[in-house]
Image 1 (cartoon, rainbow, N blue to C red):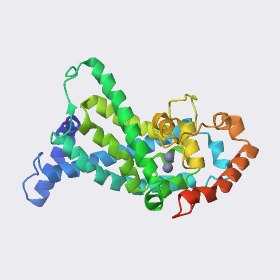
Image 2: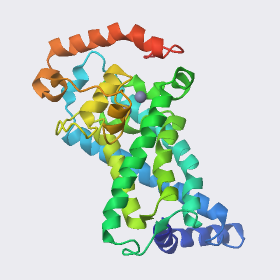
Image 3: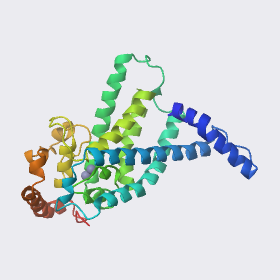
Image 4: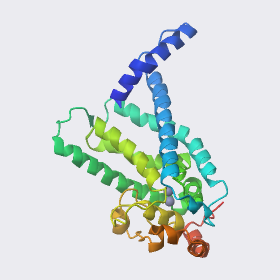
Length: 300
Ligand SMILES: [Zn+2]
Ligand SMILES: [Zn+2]
């Protein structure tokens, strides 16, 4: 992140802080001021995540998303706008909670490194694989614990308002929920070394992935990859498929549910008969879901 901040300071922020100092007749804040770094990081990270969210989800909605899903009986009125509003409320707060992690990186406490060959070129691929597995394991448990009755209503219920998702559901969380599920991404670089550009690329990838698993379009039925089909099962049937990237930990800890054939077949899943049967199964399952989640109802 320090390379990004270096360019931002040089081409954007230095002149802004200089002008602000002129206007207030004070000395410009130095680059190493913690207040300036926090403020600059908020402006940059928030601009990045909002642009990325609306850009990626918007493209996915326009080009990939099967809009016939909006006819599903469990699709809420004006749901797409409710998802956008929910994400827009959450993102500033998630950004603020994220800043201490990035400050930790900027001040050299993480294991981010700059030299491409510091651990050999093979390690670049190995570290990317470690990042996926480490974050998948952590998110599995964060997500699973968020389904615990003591936590669910306060933290994760909002994301399950979307039973049939659009890509805009990807970041439509309660802010604490979104932050908790993002902690493994920030924590990873404090646990093992990752090259700074590999880390930035992985960070973009995880945001795209989050949109992809909510866009309802099922490219392949790979049994190991936790794709849109698996996450659709999570939103439809609640306490299965907690993983983010793989099905490995759901299989290991007995929460895996194989998507049925109707989830993959576009004409089948859009048939009124299948959608009504799905809605009926969800309504029938609600009492047992609420037995797991005793503290609240699944839908507002
Ligand atoms: Zn969940
Ligand atoms: Zn989701």
